[in-house]
Image (tube, rainbow, N blue to C red; front, side, top):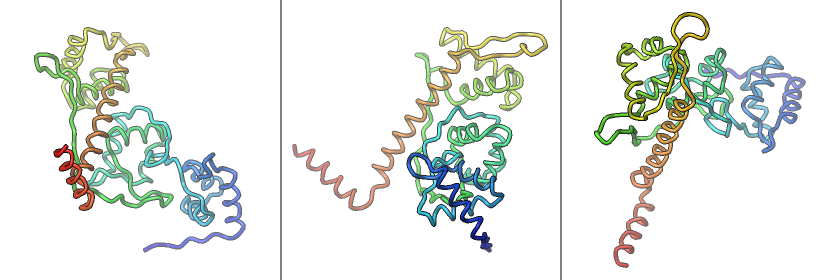
Length: 265
């Protein structure tokens, strides 16, 4: 059952004034600005988006990264495990739950984690979307890097090991979070360093603030490079998949004609 919440003319006028004051250079209202208006006036954020719609103003730059062009960072494995507890069977999380989870880590970390770990968002609090229409088919890719002997050097698992170590500053804590024993975690690191012939981390024994394991710059470069490679491959695979498998009947016929003409040449 939907509840129709109305506001008085004075409040509506104030919302409109703030919307006009906070429009971005594209003449749209950023998601974050809408939430600031709602907090300032102590109203439901949906009322802000309702007034924006009446004014013909579109919402831009979703703070959860579902549309717009806000900057992303690197997702965090520990944050992902928290978000996963709130996802449904289709790996989707409510907009409100994702925003609430940002209280301790920040919205940039949340949207970066959502992107890196392919977690979708449903039921936007601003009404921009409810449940996105699911695909009947989708393509999946898995990317890893081997040496000449076919030994796995770098992939999703080793990336996660490095990522979690960077977060918690400890190999033993990282192993615990990832659900693997210390020896396996250590072996992942040794295989990497052996094949790359580079030091990827430093470990200081003892207690105090300086104790623990720290990744060096090269390790962070490898994490970012692998993620970029994986994203590029997924983007290409998704685009090609749509071209080959999800064409409309008319497009398929045109494509078949083009292929036939190419063979005649």
